[in-house]
Image (cartoon, rainbow, N blue to C red):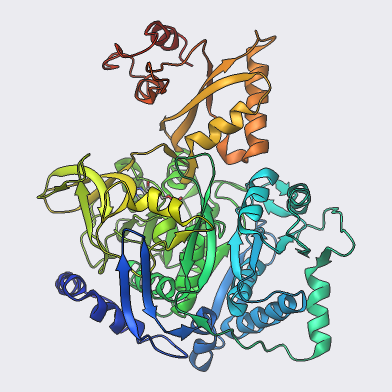
Length: 637
Ligand code: WT7
């Protein structure tokens, strides 16, 4: 059995693409019809990019979980929906069939209801990568409660900021989580966060590690106890809340060029249609395939291609709790071998890291079940692409290089596995319905091929960001104001002689460290929290494994007793304020920063020095004090 809208040849791609541009509404309507609706739309699309104000499938009524669960029960109740591989390979793996997943989602939705959750409430989820995380996400969607998943690597401060911004009423967490040989004290972190979050009146705590946790009377309850209450009440069924197409499905916080992360808002219908369509087409999903996306559900990749895309397609999705290098650097290949994975979707940083461990860890693993490989999150260099293609795919699996963003909800530019041509280090062509263009600094469109510019999209696709939670103006300014009439991605790109796109990286003050997005301003704010710091400037530099490393120039107020100790304290401060993912890789103490007469830091110069390029620093004559540049060059770490 296949999907009616799955593209199977290059010619078909070209024809479908053309149709999607000529008649976007007809195109998306045709796909949307294949889903389950309580009521179909009155209008397919209404949009303007100035507000912005974008509405897909207006008037339609649905619940995404009926499309991810209920509608599959007739034909594949006993097919695995989720296969879960624990952190420790000695522990038992788990399989949840569609029937079981449906049951558990309804059951936990009833737990949420018992705890006062209603449609529209915001729920913060801070959990390890266990099936209950997917269950919690889907249970929220079942009730129309808005989930805000926060990645387990964020600090208490970061969680508190996100909870306060969304005014969450309930938190779902676990006692702890396992990652490699570490135990992460999740509930402890939540307790620290909640000191500053009066909006939260209830915390549901799943048992995972059974490490010691504080359980506060009247606020904290155990997941397992709450499930027991549902069992004694007898009826586990939970009818799905009927949602409007444009009701909010979830909020996901992501970093921008300002200090404060923003809550990207996605809505029900468009997000469902687009993640399903892009899943089925990019990965060429076939019935029986096992799809293994190695991301964490705390990021958009996990939302779209572990949970919603695969499940709405009735696929089997594989969830992995651990890390690629534990117990050793062969873990991914063990998982592929163990379950006979067909589709592997991972990040360039993981590939580069595993590449560094050598082929010994690949040897002896049966990777013959693999059919398709994918990458996401950052530009993939040619060397890593070839290693992946040759040593993991054995030269016979197409590699899809999927470019997209938290704000886009799903894949916008990628080859379709085995259907459209692949090209190392190139995301290649837009998905149907996606209309990318390149513009110059002034916003003039750059036509033709073999050109480069800033990447914009000129027409809405169904899962485009609708707003930034609580601050629509911020959404407008960030994405729709730089080039009026266009969605601006923040990325630079090349278009080769054949029209293939190659994403070169961010052109704003956002870093991409190991595929994780962090704003330089955010890191600077955290560094500046350290008592000894007067001022700082953060830039990215090329890093062999992480893609980009974090380089911080810091003005310190007093002389150091020990420079390295000061460095460690600053790093610790950043880990406390944001989380370990934002720790600077290099810290250089400086006596001044290169500033223009108006006080603006000239990051271009700092970036070049961090990259090791000290020769062509360009014009420094506009600097207030050009001599600091010499000092900074000489003190490079
Ligand atoms: C930024 C978005 C997409 C989900 C994971 C990251 C970079 C993403 C690619 C790719 C080159 C890529 C871009 C983008 N990026 N995929 N295939 N090739 N760059 O989501 O955290 O929202 O980050 O990641 O710079 O803007 P995100």
